[in-house]
Length: 433
Image (cartoon, rainbow, N blue to C red; front, side, top):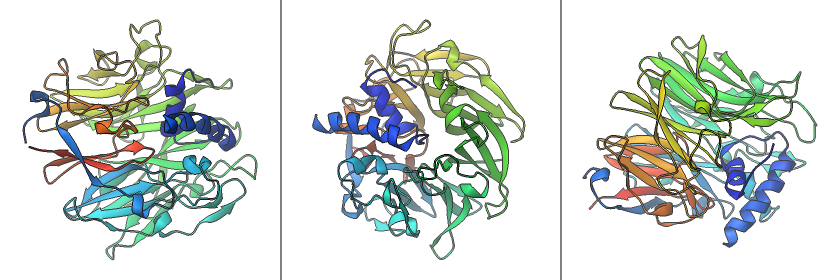
């Protein structure tokens, strides 16, 4: 696999979320991260508003680097998961990296809702040392309970879904090793990690990256359960060649899923990304097979639906045969099968290399970018044609690269909160006048 440019490598470190060779990924991330670390009214009707830090997990994190990639409202409280992935261990190989869950009744006063590592014991790994579950990629409310994926970025621990019981204690309900076995070098096993959650037709779904033990090549799968309980999960889809599954979204009665990275097997070259959908959860059809016709698409972002259209973000890192300008893009469809381009060129800045996702807030459609150079930004529109900035670059901090896919954005008590995917990520809140 090749990566052209520093922004593309950043994406590999911060967005692919899985490792076929942990030593390879760590070496790449070290080189890039060192260079980086050295160095009320509708939003579409006003100048860029200010943003304030609503929560900084720094006092709780065992290391100096952390991010927030999962935020959710549950029982009139705001929950988030702060992560300290092993990607950051290059600064000090001896530090402990672990994730932790927090909650707040008002978005101001915060308390831990779990111990470090989500209250689960670590393992001693020959490559990562003392290894905890160190971050999460999503949370979801289902049947009156809050669920969360727990990820080990070192891939030494099984991917996991946690559920908070009535006593406020988090309990495991699914280990990926229940369905997918480790493979490869025993000193560096590849253990499937669980990514995104969603609810569709009264069932809970999760996607997972794994490796086919017979071929050794990557794939992604979708699992579901009618109760969320242990022992009730079944596999309902497999996507060969997907190095990482992306976001879910329900639109016009169908469940959609896209890919973050798709690979040509067996030469491991990146292919255009895909979007699939299902109307029953079992039978899936591809609706975007080839990255909207561009051979160099490397990733897709999160979805949103707005005024009868399904929108999705996309990435272009370089000029391609069907691409006039590098930079993030937005595509939309009224039926899920016929798509049109509504924004290209990263909102006029090619360093906005990806539209990482979209959301709807106060009647506006808003899109957030991934920018590893000056920080991501939020842009809002009333018609998906005219876009106005709703934040300064980096939300005022150039290390805030983006807010991740469709899992770290929430409207809580009418306020918009975004979790920052960064080297020192916080939860930021829109500062209303």
